[in-house]
Each structure stands twice: as C-alpha cells, then as structure tokens.
Length: 248
Ligand code: ADP
Ligand code: MG
Image 1 (cartoon, protein in one colour):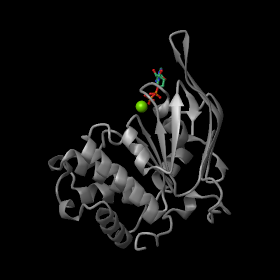
Image 2 (spheres, protein in one colour):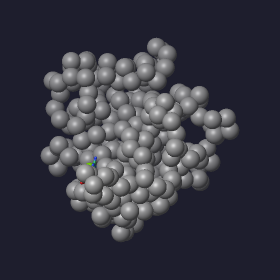
Image 3 (tube, protein in one colour):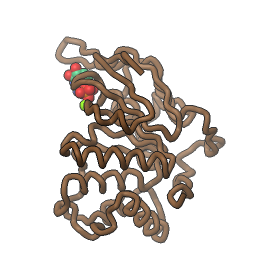
C-alpha cells in the first residue's frame, strides 16, 4: 500500500495525547447542530438539529435537494460557518467554539476542502498549485517533492503536472484540486458538489477517485451532492431534507 505510509505532517496541529487516534472512534461527531440565518427580520432555519457521526476512512454521501442545508452543514463542520446551537467534535475534540486561528490551522493540516469550482491558480502549473499548499503547511522541500509526485500519481495526473491549470479540462482541474486538498494528508475531506460542473461520466471518475483516496490513504470523505450517482461509491448515504436528516 504505497500511499498509506505517511503520517500527518502537522503533529503540532494536535494537542498532546491526541496524536494517536483510536481507529474505532468516530473522527467526526455532529450533535444537534442548528444554524439559523437572519434575513432582514426573518429567521431562516438552514439546519434544524443534525446529529451524525462518521468513522475514519469512510466515504459518506450527504444527499439532498438544493436548499436542504448541505453546504451549511459542511461549512459548520469545517469552521467556515458557526452553528447557532449544538456541537461539532473532530478527532476527539470539541471544535465548536475554536477561535479562528485554530480553525485556520485545522484547515491547513487536518481538514481539506473541495468545491464545485476548484479555485486553482490558473497560471500556475498543477505541480505549483499543490506545492503552494504544502509550503503553507510548512512541509520541507524534499518531502514536498515526494508528496506531490505521490498525489499526482494517485490522481492520474503525472502527464499534466507541468501544464498550467487553465489549459486542463474540467475533470483534470478538479483532479488537481483534489490532489491539492489531500496533499497535506488531512484526515477529513469535505467536498461540496465536487461533480456539479462536470458531465456525468467525468463526475463518476471523480467519485471513483474519492473512493480510491479513502481506500489507499485512509482519508475520511464527506461528499455533499444532489447527484444520485454518489450512492455507488459511498459506504453510507445521509439524506438531508429541510435541514434535517430524514434517512441514513
Ligand atoms: P444546499 O447546499 O443543500 O443547497 P444550503 O446550505 O446552501 O443548502 O442552504 C440551506 C438553506 O439556508 C436555504 O434555505 C438557503 O436559502 C439558506 N441559506 C444558506 N445560506 C444563507 C445565507 N448566507 N443567508 C441566508 N440564508 C441562507
Ligand atoms: Mg450547496
């Protein structure tokens, strides 16, 4: 298992005693999370008490129609938004009220994001896009080089590594974005509609790659989508409707 060998780069992102994870413990626990937006004087409940837990190495699909609360939930889990009430536990730690600098650290080292539109630097090569993220994570030069080769191979991108990303197809660009997200060896990937801008065949390839990442690197992956195709690649499907889980 060539890709499994790595330890997280950022031991300092963990508190003492949290470095060794018990594999049987959930990596993520969401407890009674609500999120109410205020629009003018109206209250819009986007999440109405969501509770779930996810085991390490699982691919979990978060399915639901547009407006069901998928993005809000992912953002609350990854610290881009804050729950109105309830708790989020990640790697055994209550992260609900972490100060922003701590969240930045978590997102740099432990939680990776993949969005519908990939947000790559268009004039940088695939290699450079990934290199930049590893620099931010404080990874040394030799290790960066090794890891970039590893993730490009895993994503089937070695042929394209020197191409500037604007020259690549939509599917290739999304693969670079995924390679970049997994490069720092995060334990959790949050993917929000990662196939939303792709045709269905390319979308399936992307979903298969998420499956491969979970299997080969042990990464936990949460994919928010309205795409039914995700079911074939997931260990579990969570169905969200009007801010509530209606089926698991
Ligand atoms: P999904 O990702 O499943 O399409 P969202 O999480 O984006 O769902 O949205 C859930 C609900 O919250 C929707 O009713 C949406 O209109 C509302 N909402 C999302 N973001 C905001 C916001 N920033 N301000 C007000 N309402 C919002
Ligand atoms: Mg959304």
